Image 1 (cartoon, rainbow, N blue to C red):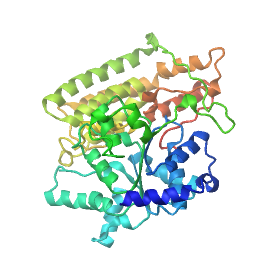
Image 2 (image 1 turned 180 degrees about the horizontal axis):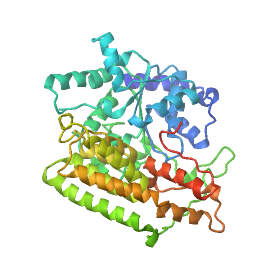
Image 3 (image 1 turned 90 degrees about the horizontal axis):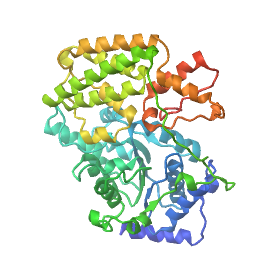
Image 4 (image 1 turned 180 degrees about the vertical axis):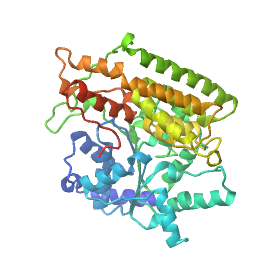
Length: 451
């Protein structure tokens, strides 16, 4: 009944065939964003997967749709669920582009509000809220918590959230809701959100990721009847629910291509005699990782296994990245043993859904006790990393600068497109710091936490 009534009101508004959101927003929408808005509002129910490629402005599209629904009197209360690192960005973009104030409701605020009124449903306090995805997913157990503690947490973060009466729910990086099974907490959160609002926008540049079961779980949130099981997934059935623009087809307001053609080639990076300390550091970290990972598996300490995988990737990224990681790990190892735990509640599914910087923060920020003799190993590796930094730039930085100065390369337009490399904030910092020593090129750091 709710969906039918909402659809009838949209149909009545569309009788005037006018889109109001682009006119009164402070952003000038691109053609594909106008198309997304028009397509969303032309349907009999606003429940879509916005799946534009990275960099095409899915946030703007979601904001336009939200504003259009508000202007038509169809939406008052909006919830935005995003990864932790995107909360501030969403609040800022909604205010800047649409003059909409969203309140960030994070775990730290729950304690403060609870002291004011233990019985209040905090989610009803504000009409427009942004919250971190993992802070509201249901939990079955938590190390050191009683059943009463778990029930209270779920009531406050999950049950009250779903009962707060939302008109529109937006989920960014929504592929994370697919999970590895239908019992994973993130998918259970997705199911709850899908039932809690008549209007639903799922945003993801990579909704499929080669996993048909997970993709089915994701699109089933839009319409469970249309996708009862994975056998119903086909291009023809999915197409009405997906709005997607590829970069190669995107144009600007003048009708010109929005992006220049991209040419990718492999650039080998080699060590010579000057880079002996870098090679030695890489080999030492690799041995530390190999032994540590084997011990973690034998002792069934999953978090340490994640830590070892992370260390191997960081030493491949840059000396600065591994040095920073080793410093953070050593800080934990210097903590009194009584304050450390053997493992954390981080699951393999959650680990795989995190981007590089989220993995760094989750793994290195956890107070997990050491493997046998690990502190001595970390101290030795840290000394080697600091000595390595003192010898000069990484060979990768040198190779990059050599490329910049090749004839025909326009240095000010150089882009580092390797996603794995961009994931490590410390590597970006290192690239920016090494540059003034060697070249007058201006380098600007761009990452998810940039203002």
